[in-house]
Image 1 (cartoon, one colour):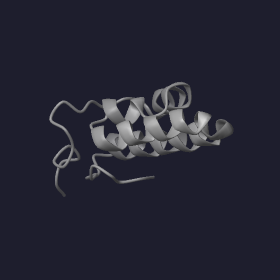
Image 2 (cartoon, rainbow, N blue to C red; image 1 turned 60 degrees about the vertical axis):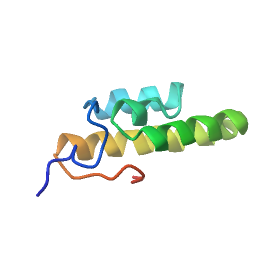
Image 3 (cartoon, one colour; image 1 turned 90 degrees about the horizontal axis):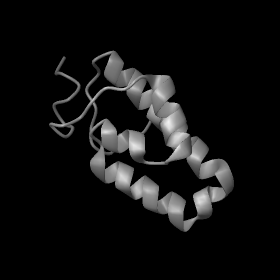
Image 4 (spheres, rainbow, N blue to C red; image 1 turned 120 degrees about the vertical axis):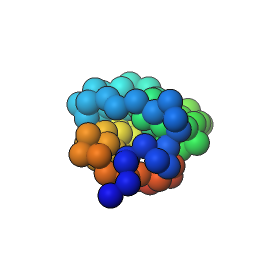
Length: 85
């Protein structure tokens, strides 16, 4: 299996799944940016901003995505830039 950071930004960092969930809920897109999914993180941030956080639903979905991506990175799974969940 290829290392999990192959397709992500060279500055990607691993964060804990629960930290990613909390950070994604507070500031949607931030965990994706930190974990190397820069385009996806920026996209999610602007979607949540322009939809007023989707009435809370957008932040929840982004937080869950961040949690699952952080868990995959912790297991050294290969991820793509735009991979969700």
